[in-house]
Length: 447
Image 1 (cartoon, rainbow, N blue to C red):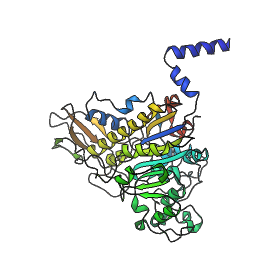
Image 2 (cartoon, one colour):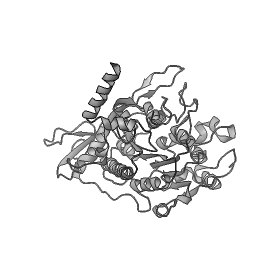
Image 3 (cartoon, rainbow, N blue to C red):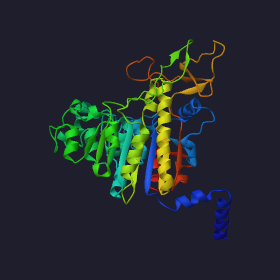
Image 4 (cartoon, rainbow, N blue to C red):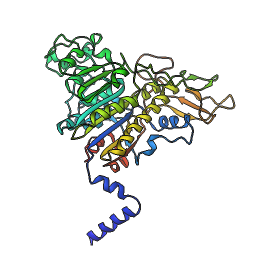
C-alpha cells in the first residue's frame, strides 16, 4: 500500500510540474556557482528592478526556484550554547555557508568564543571540500578580496579586520611567527585557489606590510604569491589577456574596494530632496566590471574535468546601503544581475551547473511613497530617483547609528530580516521554503 501511495505522490508531483525538481535532485552538480549580493535584501532587488522600469525583467527572474533564508548569528559567551544575534555581520553570515556552522560577528570561519578577540576553533570550509574533490575553485568580489565574504572561503581568523601583515595587532597569536596561519591575505595566497579577482592590492603589496615568520618571512604577500607560482594581474587589459595556462591567477584591480559602477548624491534628511537620475558610468576603464570578471573566471575554471566551484560577490550593494547612496547601491545590484546573466548563459550549454543566488544579510533601504504634499518626508535619509518610467521613486534609509565614527549621513545598520534565495540546476529544489544559511554548506555539495 505504501509503495502505491508513493507512486501516486510521484505521479502527482509530475502532474503539477514538480518533476523538474525531482529530476534535478537525482544528480549532483558538476559545477557550482554561488552568488552573494552583500546586503541585498528584497528592497535592494526591487529598487534595481523599478529604476529600470516596473516591467523590466531581471536575470534573477530566470532562476527557477525561490525561497528564504534566516541569517542570525551568535553572541559571544562561555558556551556550549550561545544567545542569538538577530542582525549579523558579513563575517558571521559568510562563515555559515562556508562551514555549515554558526559563529559570532567579526569571526572568519572560526567557531564562537567568550569574546571577539579570543580565537575560536578553525572550521573546514566549502572551498576546501571542493578542492579535496579535485574541483577547480575561484573567488570573485568587487570589494577588497580580503573582505569578510570572500575571506570566509580560504581563511580562518578571529577578527575580520586582520587582513594583512600590518593589520595583525588585534590577532597577535594568529601570525605565522606565533605558529598561526597568518593574515587573511597570506592565507588567501597560501590556499592556492585557481582564480582570485577583486580589489585590495594594498593588503598584498608593501603597504600591507611584510610577512613575519614562515617560508616567506620578510616578503610582501605579493612576493609570496609569485614564489608560489601565482600570476599577478592588475588591469582590465591584463584580465582580457588571461589564458588557462596562466592559472593560478591573482587579480587585484584596485588598491582598496573597486569603484562603484554608478554614482549619485547621498540621501539627505527632511525637505528639499532633488529628483535626479543616476550617473551610470562611474567605474574607471582600467577596472573590469563584475560581469567580465565572472565571465573570465568561468572560462578559466570550466576546463577542469571534475568541474569547479566559484563564489561571486557583489560587495558594494552593502557598502552603498551603509552610505545611504541609492544610485551606488542600485548600480551595484544591476551589475550583480548582469553577472548572474553570464552564469545563466554558461548553464544553457552546461546544465550540470548549479547556480545559487542569495544575500548574506538584509539592509536598510526602503521604497516609500513619493512626497507630493511637502509634509510627508520620512524621518530618515531620503533620495528621489527618476526611473525609466518617468516616475519618481523615493528611497529612504532609517537605521543609522551603532558603533564606529559618525559619518554624514551616519552609517546605516544591517537589519535582521530573512533574505531571498534563488537557484537553478541540479539540486535547486533544496532551497525551497525557509532554510538557514548553514544549510547552504550541504546544499552546495548536493546533500
